[in-house]
Length: 111
Image (cartoon, rainbow, N blue to C red; front, side):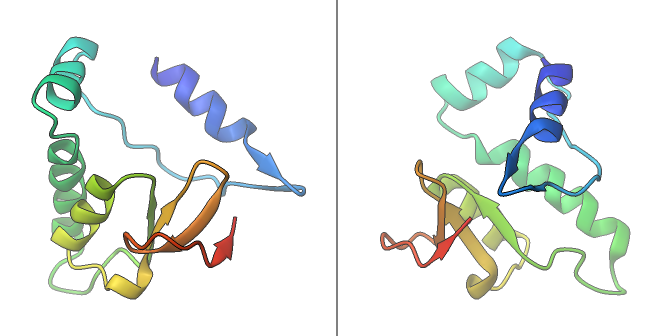
């Protein structure tokens, strides 16, 4: 599953632009653990908050390692707020691929 995710992220392209190379952080838990956490408990943000907090700790007290963040669900917005990202730098991407600030409904930026 991890290889498929990495391949997909390398493959994604729009208008000749692709994602920059960089680390890909995946849940170290098993598929069933992740499925239980995200579907049964309905707490997908638990992994994201823990992971982002661990990364943040590597940079403190020297500064915030995160400049902006993108997600596709309210849980993502919650996780990014938990690690101190400014509301103006949190974007939600809707199914057609439009990014909009925070958890607002109206898209303002096209990805």
